[in-house]
Image (tube, rainbow, N blue to C red; front, side, top):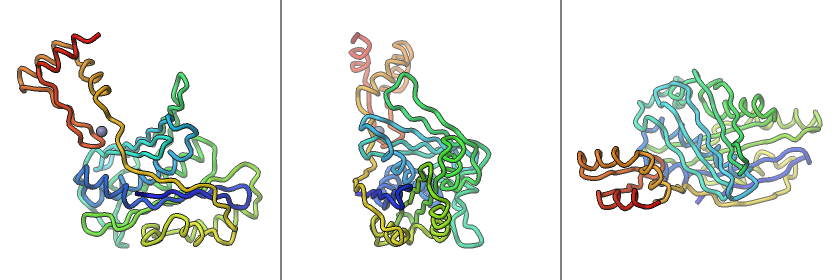
Length: 288
Ligand SMILES: [Zn+2]
């Protein structure tokens, strides 16, 4: 279980932090990720959790894609307003490259020849869609740039995933959002604090989100607003997969069954398998 904590500082700034080790380990387990894939998807899932917490209603839904044309391929992460996240990455086994400074080369593996796209479905006729160019592929700075350019909202983002061989040892992220009218003096103090925030995975090693907020923003006397649990949980179900199979059309479905013996649909996000025999398909297509 991961806990996200949100606080208000200096009247004009909210700081949200999450300790996300369990979310990252669930993703590693489902997708059998190589270390570089775990680091990239782990960072994106951590950010999805932080963004999902900003959704107003439980049924609101957010989907983010990061497609930098690097060896990892497209990353997709989703969050709802109830503290659930899920995600997938095109290449689960991309080769892990380490930079000269000892860090994993996440930027090189994600690539920066592409875009980050955020789709927010808040129950209106049309979802809200925002997009921006990737600037580094390192994910945290790409999200900060997205907020600055596409949402005209200055913010700071730091994300970290620390791995111990195949599994995540510690992970977390901090999302700082500045409201309009924030005094210059606060901004410059914030900048100094944010500059000191590196090696985020170590910061969350054995520390809660609340402790990390106090460690960095203690001088601002944070007012804690919220603690919430966030878990990796998929929202796929039989009804959605039925609709998907129906969209194939009866003749295509029958053709697959006669060739393969059955239709097998595997959910990208959780690995759950849905199987349709000829009998299941007949019943499905007979249903109006
Ligand atoms: Zn699923």
